[in-house]
Image (cartoon, rainbow, N blue to C red; front, side):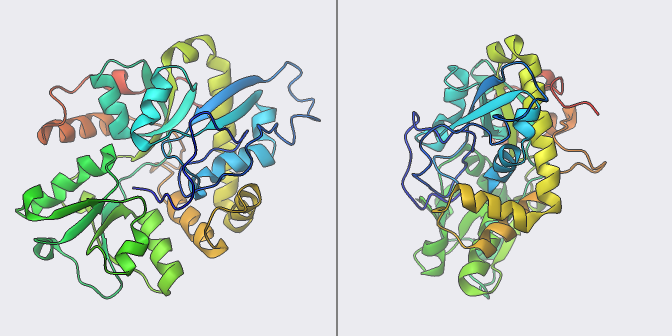
Length: 347
C-alpha cells in the first residue's frame, strides 16, 4: 500500500526519535535524542523511553508528525524520548507490538482487527487518519471504472488493508479475484507508468503525489469507499497493553506531542516537509512530492468536529462488520476490544 523504493531496514535498526512508515532510508542509524531534550527544563524528571514501530519497512512523509514532534521539542516537553524501529515487512508490524519489541506502533485498522481475532495484547489508542482513501488508480488519461477491471493486471502489496479492500471493489464490479491478475509489488508507481501493470492499488496520499511528481498530471481513480467498502480510518496508533498499563502518563505524553506536531505540520506543510527531508536526506523523493503527500495525508487526519486522534465505536463496528461480510472475521468483537480513548491528550 505504501512505497518501498530504497533499502529495506532490519527490525533492530533504529533511527532515534524519527518514525518511518515507507519510502526508504538507511541513514540516521544512531539513536538520537530530541534536540530540545538536552536543554529543556519543562520536565524535570527523566523522560520515559518509548520504542515506536511503524507499519512499513522504510520511510516517507507519514513520518512528518514524528519528525516535527522531535524537532519542535514536543516530545521532550511531554516527558518522552521516542526511538523508532522498522519491521522487516508489513505483516510483522503488529507482531512486533504484540511481543513487546515495541511499546507503541503505527498499524492499519485491519491489522488491529486481526490482532483482536488472534487475542494479541494490542489496542488502538488514537486515529492517525479518519477516513478510507484507498482505491484503484490508472495512468493519467486512462479511464477506470467498475466496467474496466475485468482481465486487468492489478498491483497489490500483500498487506492486510489491500487484501480487505479489493474484494469490495471486485464485488461491486460483479467480479472475483479470478477475473483479474494480481501482482505483488514493492512500489507500484514505476510499474504503472511503464505499463507493467494496468492498475495500481494504493491510497490517494501516495499515488496522486507520485504520479503528479513524475508526469505533472493526476492519475485516474475509483475509491473503495464509493464501491461497498467502509469509510473507516486506514491507520491508527496502537500500544502494547502491558506497556500501556505500566506507562499511562507516557502514552498520554506521546499522543499530546503527536497532536501538537500534527497541528503545526498541517499549518506549515512546506516547513514540515523540509524538517522531514533534513532528517531523511535520502528519502528518495522530491520536495514537491513530500509537500503534496503530507497535505493529502493531513486532509484525512481530523474528525468532523476538528479533533485529532479521537476514535469512535462506530468506526470499529463498521470495519468489523465489513470484514465479517467478506469472510475475514468470524465474529465482530465489542468496540472496546479494539480501541480506547483513555490516553488522548486533554486540553
